[in-house]
Picture 1 (cartoon, rainbow, N blue to C red):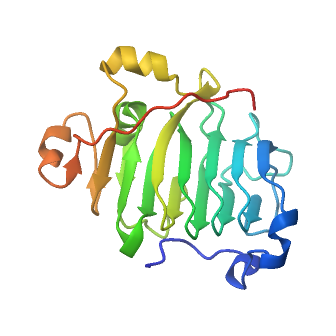
Picture 2: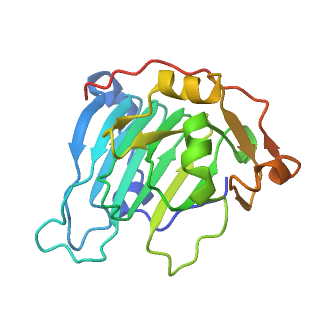
Picture 3: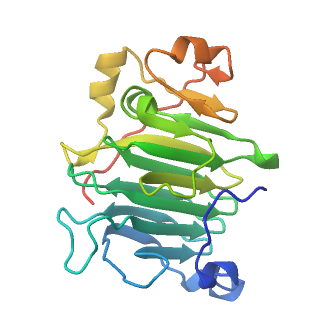
Length: 235
């Protein structure tokens, strides 16, 4: 499977997953995780499990932490061998940049991306390294026009970035930075008239509301519908 990511921490590169003997004692990682500023570290936040689920809200600080440089990009890493990963990036509307990387084995991954996201989204998902993912209608309408999908990321890029690698499924949804909550299923059903989503397959796509029709013939399968689910917002 091709590597999409920047250099990960030494703990990850040397085998971060826990031994099989410790699986029974492994606790799920859940709840709100306040993201600190870690000067001199590869990651401001990192979390690893072997088989336990990860279901977290990554709460970025609403104001620049003390001693954090003005143009610092918050870096976060989530990793699991087989536990499902669900992560909400709760960014403030001030729009400070972040880099979220998810490295998994067979995990199914669902990410809620801030509605003011502007940057690069790269992913490899499914067997045989297929580049496919499902997007909620809210993501298609709100974020996709401002996102570069599976495009090469310039080395000088210091803005928003999300990268996912897994042999499981990948689903992208929206974190509403103004409501400070995940996208509301009922609202988007009213707006779009359905609970559908979209699957994007292939490389080097940038979607926009003006070009969605032309991109449909270049590998976007808008007929695929993902099932919306109800979420517990009480993180």
